[in-house]
Amino acid sequence: MIRLFQRHRIRKNREVHGLWEFQTINASDKLSSKRYQLPVPSCWEMHPEFLTYRGKAIYRKYFEVKEKTNIRLEFKGVSHTATVLVDGNIVATHYNAYTPFSVLLPNVDGGEHLLEVLVDNRFTEDSALHIPNDYYTYGGIIRSVILEEIPDCYIEKMKAIPKKVDDEWHLELEAHISNLTDERQKVRMEATIADTRVITPFSEVEKGKTVMIRRSIPIQNIREWSSQKPNLYELELNLYRGEASEPIDDQIDRIGFRTITTLDGHIQLNGENIVMRGFNRHEDHPQVGASFSQTLMVHDLELMKDMGANTVRTSHYPNDELFLDLCDEMGFFVWEENHARGLSLERMQHPKFQEQCLQVNEEMVTNHIHHPSIIIWGILNECASNTEEGREMYKEQIEQIRALDNSRPVTFASHHRAEELCFDLVDICSFNLYPKWYTDEDPKVLVEEAKKWAEELGGKGKPMIMSEFGGDGIYGYRSPTHVKGTEERQAEIIRLNLKAYEEKSYISGMLIWQFADCRVTEGLGFLLTRAGTMNQKGMVDTYRRPKLAYQTVQEIWKKGDKKS
Ligand code: ADA
Image (tube, rainbow, N blue to C red; front, side, top):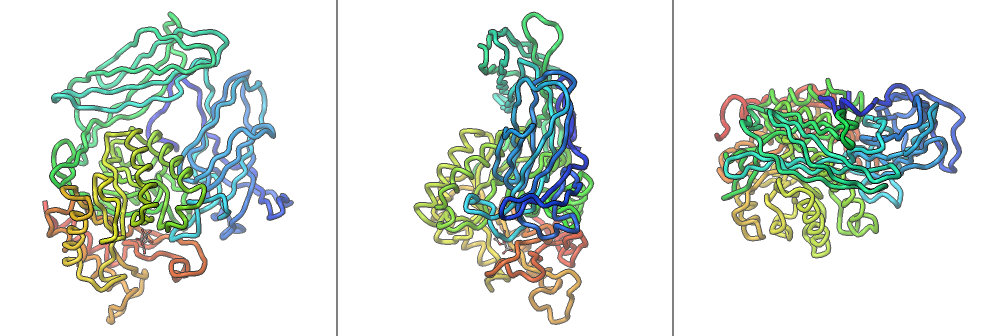
């Protein structure tokens, strides 16, 4: 399953799932002689022979088209570098596991064609963001692959931003129409949403060019999207050529009408202050790696709800669109963030760092802009925002995101305390602090200090989120000593932190590190020698079995002690 709704009724499209042929490639670029069958989407680590394989591999699948046509291939996520070949010719390359990319192949002959994807998950010099880290970079085609047949005139992309003007909802619609024919074409669009249907006047598209059509559509009687009532509307865009009465192409997406603002130190949804309570979550599970099924995604969200949460932070990378669809429907708030965890200034000065971040940001925002559940864009978790050089990169990325979408607040999670230099650049000040785990500080005292840092360092009047706190608890390790690593100690740490933050009216969010234990890269150094190569700060273990802290969270968030 790719999405929770049909993306097209007119454009022909299909999943290229099922078993693909798979062969590894060794260091001297030799194909191994053995061929396997691996499912797509999936992570190759789920195959008994590739449990810890880090390297290169090739996936192969034949596809057929009836007659000459234009083909669009879309990859929702290949981990982490992909080279796509059709009939032996390279047609696309892409870096980063967690954002989608596509390629358009005009005039593909009818018949059978070979699709090959060369996948590389090594930590090479070319990779600034995928590095050995406190999570695992899996290998393979980890998200869906889609094949579409595209008409000669087609909708290349659309953007639809709901705006409330004087209590009236409008949809600011922007559609890009491309013309692959040898002649100028006359086109018009039909947009349908709720009870509203709009047909645009004719536009002309030169041969080989793209035209942008813009419309502000007033829409009556809207039921707004909220956490309690996550109302969604299908926006259907049809493309007509000339005077024809039948559309030739379409795109469908879902829209939630809601406003998200920051004012007087709080975050508002539809004008009402909200408090975000929830978890940091890695896309990670021992039986599927990073390649989740719908059932497993829903299970995670249900467990979060069961603990009384309303928020999930996609630490530390953009998530699968299916997961975001589920959050839209289930009324979760999402902090979606770009891909970067704990990169020092030296790492940020990697020649490809900024370019690779800007690409992720672009792909994240443009592809996920319609999800009402996403109420915050986040960037660069715990990177060098305490340095002048780092600040320049934060600034450029924040400006880029705002230029792509100015309808959501932007933040980043900082661990620099009084050394922070970038709070003035963002809308929300977010802190990763681990009182009672990495330090012995009292969370009640520390949160007050954090408030002062925010105020003194450019964040005066801005909302504040405790974006990470917690401690390890090894599933099943219980001991009357309550030493670090026991479930008891973890539950105590969570209780002390939550209680401290629930007491403070200025806290707009508290996000526990983390929802579930996750696999980390094996290596040297503090993070990479974690016992069992796992970060065990989850409220549930990797198999989603609840630890003691699960009940603690439930008691506070579900049964009472929280602020309103
Ligand atoms: C950091 C980081 C997380 C995780 C956590 C921990 O703050 O953002 O990814 O590594 O610490 O468990 O130490």
